[in-house]
Image (tube, rainbow, N blue to C red; front, side, top):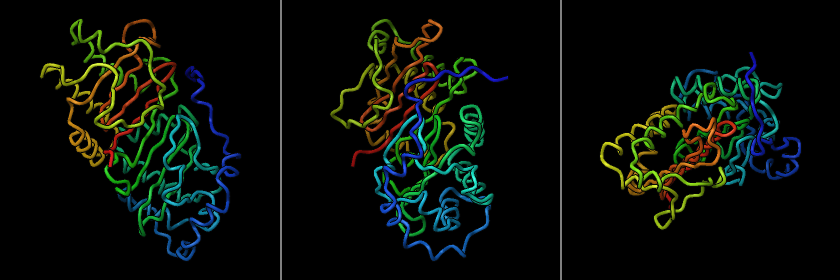
Length: 325
């Protein structure tokens, strides 16, 4: 049975045909010219860490493939995020890639997620776009010879693997996740909303009034503000110890799809930014699905941390966690 999915303005895809005109072939060619000598040394598709899997994938790429998906590390497209766009034209399932390369790409995703997180992503991609094969990848820099980042994009997903090339930035930079199922019962990430709303239920009247706001900011507005920033909602530092423990539990739920080393980096960045007490949480009356006062749009934000979750009409989540250096 096909579930109902609603469209939204933020889900309008970037036209992949016009993309290459925007980028310009000369800039791409300049990024990949030094790499052409490696083609005969392609590694087999075996289980590997994300870093080695990215390097193996890169080593299999032909000149034509490099021209289509490879960019300098500092290219502006590496920093862009959107709920629905393809950073490059070729899709994973097309004839642009070999079976071996497709397996390596799946290995990369598997190695930046937990087992449950991987299964969730595979299901989400099936539901939202027809499968992993309908997504696109890009490589910035040259794995094995300097800074690099592999990036997967498509409907409701931006995922990165960078081998710690992006210093003090969790996940290699801002990421996006989501799910196009309209009903909260069917949306696999509605559990995130329910978990954070458990915290809201513990607030007294004064704190609830501070935490609940009328209108949400733009979902993609996740620029970091640093220590001098002004953050919406209620400071976690104002909560009692048992409430703070519940916030910690909530963070574990939110981070549970991702690999341990990324979670460790998130917590390290959060600590460097002043810890949990520096985070603020905001809930928004706007977009209350089913009018049940389970607030479907919410935001966690602090000096080095933004997690914006929009559950209406379906889930879009934008995450940016990084030390300002």
